[in-house]
Length: 154
Image (cartoon, rainbow, N blue to C red; front, side, top):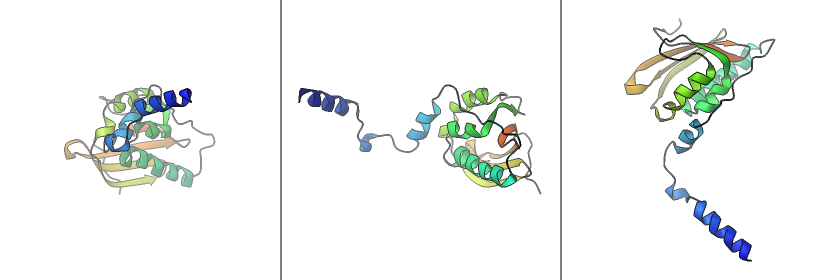
């Protein structure tokens, strides 16, 4: 009986009532705080186009809708190349960089496209900026990214 009372006290001490939990994206922010990421492992032969297209859709949902940077990087290969001189190459370095700021971004998705092992994402980001990201897929994983001067494909 005494053990039950002690356990009940401990549970009550460390339980946060749902009403007092932070509103909004607190769960997303908590997930951003991780050390090493789990990254995408390329497959040989590469998966069929419809499988990569489905992965593109899941990537977009994780990155722009849920803004869950940890899940986002499960679609990115460790050897990820970022063709932006102000951003780091390698999935781990990019994850470390984005983990500090991504979860609290206000994002409006305008459009997305997957075609021939490339993805394009067009969205409004920081201060309403219009962003077009282009990603190259290889072996079912994102291996390369561009975001400088990108235009929407015809």
